[in-house]
Image (cartoon, rainbow, N blue to C red; front, side):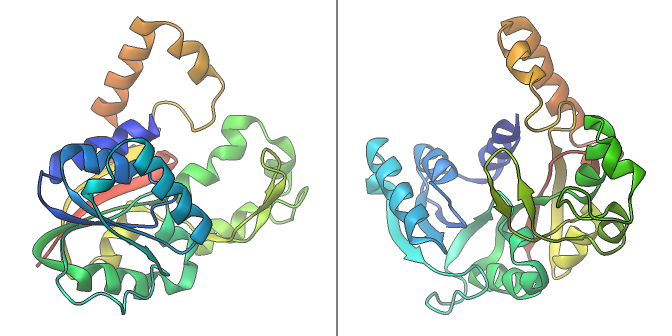
Length: 254
């Protein structure tokens, strides 16, 4: 579901021949999707490992001809790129969450390298989605001690007040998850105050990310089709935008 919602934004705003920056590309999933549309992609990530993985995935997909550059860089520093370089700038998957207090610099850079009247597509981790997690998953320990660290997980109330989520153990991956800043849709819109907000949606507002029932639903094509339609119908609702795993926003540079 998460991938589908992001791809819907790409379909609405990205066209063949446009110059697109994929900032924080990871292994290149969205670079590949945008290349299939016919956009000319600059692939950027802070990790050399992720860049090399993106390169291999793009080559395997037979789309390397649509890739203009691979750049290793921090999303807060695009000094190697001139102003107004791209028709569209994309930062999906939460890079703006992971740079935490440097998010203001990152937004300035995304806006700077985008052409006037160009569009910026971003997704960030949702504050409300994280806060309701213990209730949805039945994490009694976290709910019973909202002011205390429980099993390495940070206490709820400080996160609710600041939006800052310290590093915490990822039990599924067996590593410490990096610190993040979590957003509301209102905060994200204000962060792009110099731009015009075009649309905002939540991701996974009908079914939580990593919910095991997703696999069961997917086994029934009719049930899966209904779930996808529900997600697309509901994820722009102002009352639900903040409830999913990510908040996705399209803005236009003035």
